[in-house]
Amino acid sequence: MPRPRPRHERAALTGVLFVRHATSAGMRQARFPADPAADPSGLARARALAGALPDGAAWTSPARAARETCAALGLDARPAAALAEADHGSWAGLRLADAEPDALAAWLADPDAAPHGGESRSALAARVAAWLGGGPAGVAVCDAGVIRAALAHALGLGVLAADRIDLAPLSTTRLAAAGSGWRVAHVNRKVQV
Image (cartoon, rainbow, N blue to C red):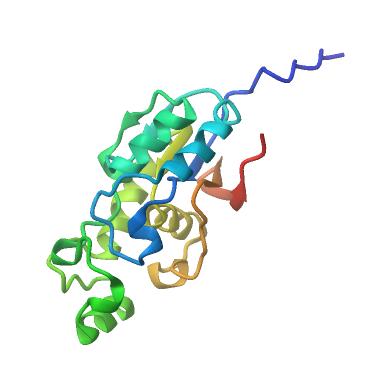
């Protein structure tokens, strides 16, 4: 009969546990990401979760809020360029409401559009799919666009369909490796301490 593990022992993770980084002022103001810092209150919530995540490898988006979230969670995470949010070009830091309406409508309707001069959402999806193709196993702290791209890849959805998935700050989304692809174990779950 196997011995029960003490509560402080955590099993190493198989698959990828995505953690959306802590809140930032830009999130609350509905701005396109421009590498803002995480909020002190969001980082305090992340510190309360330290130790609740599985042991093993960890990666972080190069974004400041993601790196700060990793530090607050007590993760020794390696930066992974593949986990960066899409480059929003001239829209970086701009409120969504202030984007030129026709250009914003085109961007929302066409995953290949990049009227801001940055990266299209389909290019982001391809980058994330390539990273998943390497078979990572561990925790990945990043922004919602990357997590939605990973879900679209796992489920065979288009980018526009994945846009409908809500992902709260500090929520987790888990993909489990399955034969020839990925299964979605859970989406937008609050971490329990």
